[in-house]
Image (cartoon, rainbow, N blue to C red; front, side):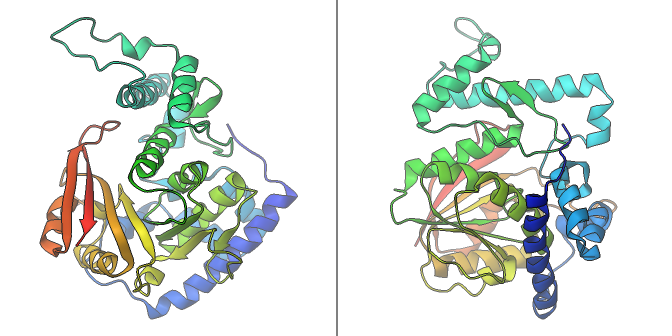
Length: 354
């Protein structure tokens, strides 16, 4: 559905603009190394409309755009695989996307032992997908101990009604990832970091697991989108933008990527990279990995695809395979590796910092 910006939204947009323009100015001193990557291509081909809105420095216009951010190219690669106009006009695509969303929910339920794993060799096969959605959501919430219903602030995004909330696939991925982290480290006095956070949904669910000290590092235009999402979805929490001063360590901090390179003390208990490293230039990923070894105490959690697809259309450049790059970097010991249960073709890997 489409949402209408409020006066409060305009005030949020003013904060976002102040932070974005500071990052734009300071970023001139931090040129990205390496070849063009997927995100350079996305900026040129898909993000221009939203960047023009940010550069207009008009908070009303920014609030209107962010209220329905999924109608803009800025969400290329971090939302439904089909663009807004395409899915809005095609019933078949909507049915396809709805089936995928329900499948993600069922896969999460299977992993939590809410449902048994099905197999083609024994018993019924194909029954789980027909399980009652409201019951599945309720049982997942009982098992994880948190509400998984997303806030209703995703204007312009196709979602599926499941129980007490409207979900897209990334809502379910993000709830799973936050749950996984809660199984690895104790929320008490822990500090989490995420490199390339999409719209910021893992941070939302991590907060529900009581991880209060959470830092995000990304490109400035994505920081603007993350700031909107997290300020709106966590109104009771302190969300600190670039250029603002945190009043407490127990806050959500949204920062441009170059700030990560300054963190050399053991700041974080776990660093997360989900659906990001393969799309970034090799030199930048190497810099991130070297920095993780300096600023992360315990773990790197990587959830990434390994398809090695062409990264820039019309070139021979290929996306990275995160597991190979991490091994070549050294200083990481793999704890586990298995298929990411909620998305075929993705590997979930946990590494100790050695």
